Figure (tube, helix red, strand yellow):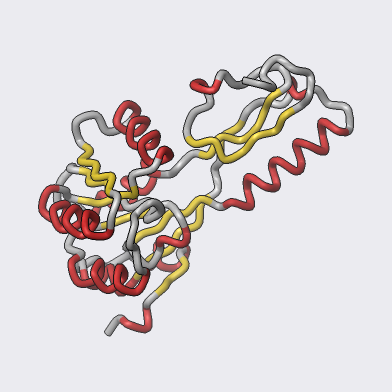
Amino acid sequence: PYYKDKKLPVVFCGINESIAEYGYPSDFITGMIEITPFNQTIKFLKPYAKGRRIGYISGNTLTQRKLVSHMEKKYFTGRMIPYLVNTWTEFQGAFLSLQNEADLLLFPNYSGIRGWEKNEAELFIHNYTKIPSGSVNIFMSKYAIVTLAKISDEHGKYAAVTSLKILAGRHPKSIPVVESEQYQLTLNMKLAQKAGIIFPLPVIKQAKLINQESVR
């Protein structure tokens, strides 16, 4: 609100899903909206799911509450089962419940979950995964079968190039707000085997594979 009606140019990036609630854009504010590829991740997982129920688990943070609200309105009204948890103990209970309540699981981020220990979490998730799971952050690939990750470089390059255009004399109003489009596919082969998922060869060829040395 402090810059919306000022003449100082502002280039933003990393605002999740929508800028409308912040009163953007304006004549001197432009940027890149961070689109989380949940819809694309679900489309990827659907062939391996037994039904249409979508589970969601993450830390109970402002960003995650915003994402859940946005997705329920835009994509998954009545089909999403969200658990936003505060502690590792809550996560364990919610994760186990979702293996039966949902047909596929979205797990975008462990940030905000108190008591999270990476090695313990990786072992727990491997032991109890039964349904297809997906994430959208590269650091989450140990905990999900499929990760369709946002690429942070896309935002940085856009912000730099746009700022240089403005410094060269272009008016911010003439530069439209855009949405992020670039994603990296990662497959966790160990978790896929645990859930009984076999990926087609063309999919494997285009993906980054992790934990494949654990697959026998």
